Length: 575
Image 1: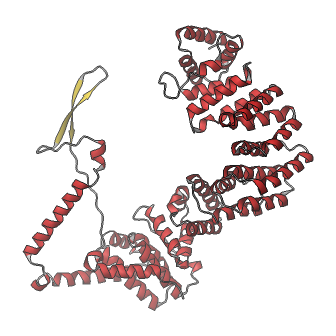
Image 2: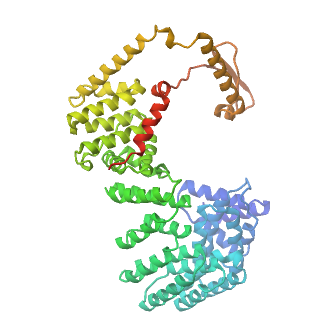
């Protein structure tokens, strides 16, 4: 649509009191027909000719109104702001209202950039904005950096003087905004750099607010990137600001390391990483940033760095699990089998329970039939090491029999005859004895491979001999429980299950679906309402849905012995 057509439409809706809805409708129409600035130009002309007051209109906008979309109005206002003529106070009032309505939504970032562009039209706008901000810091403090950065384009000396004063302000949010301004300033002159470094050095010593310290760290890194040759000063400042390990500072360090590492020297990145590894991780955002770092390291084949970072984090944070790093877990399980083998072998060989548990947690994220292999290079073909990691695999991956057995079998060709016999025994008891279903199927699938043919046949022979022995006991009455006792046990067991179902939380399907109990039949009839209000009869045939899980047999036959064995395998260490 043309500018004149949009103006006429808006004037018509203005009289009807539907201006905000009309703005959203026209915006969406322009999106569907391709890029256009007609709406913005029309809005600016109507405002500048005082046909309507855009700020006043938007002061009535709320997030919960269903007739229009608040975030579309935010975008329209942000795009129009550089072109409208009005007082700075009106704009700040409107922006504050819209930000309060939008809450913490990330899409509000453009409004700050729009305010910066508005202030860039005249230095007086920045001055008026700063006066209003200092008059009511609670209401307007978030606009401080935009006002300062706009002024820097017009009068750098004034902007620098304001920063000097603001970093001494008693309000933490104002100081934080001053540090944000520093991180985005243009260091065109060496004198500006020297001034900022002096200011930052003083602030590092005096700053007490945690969030302001985080912004101070960002400012320090930004100055280092722009000056390029003064990283020695920056390194000292980072040591001081990161030494106290506040959660906000740790988050800032993780964010910088994850997304702004391209122009930062490796020794500075090592400093930031050290801040991460020696501090508790209290924010979910920090974990997400570290997840991104780990993925980057794995993609660049820097497993040793990733492993070192993970080990420090897992040991430092008792509640942290490796699967909290979701992207890393997905990547190394799906696409990096060689690095997965190296990581698992490294952690099993360490014997550290925290790291070995991380292997278990990692494998829980994979399909149950996932096979893994050991990294032989780390084991130096020492029979002692081979047997040690095999026992670790059983201890920590017992619930994943295919993973545990495939790990042990990958060691088999490297072992001496004596160690092969011990591995054979471990594969049979407790693994194959406990899981004669899935594990036996896996062994059959590899039994034709020359490297595993002998051990698989040996295991099958042992299993058949074991089953024959069990059959021989069936006729021994003394080994059978009395029938009355068995019936009583089943009756009490069923009562317990029923009681648990009645007293426990409802099942998922009971929460989200209407449950009907059918006494007979093999189908269900229901009625569907169409758009015209009519009912249509529909019939759905019933289908069976089944799920099976294999429970370890030894947990029934000898639960105490199995538990003791697994605990021993988990806690033992290499001497």
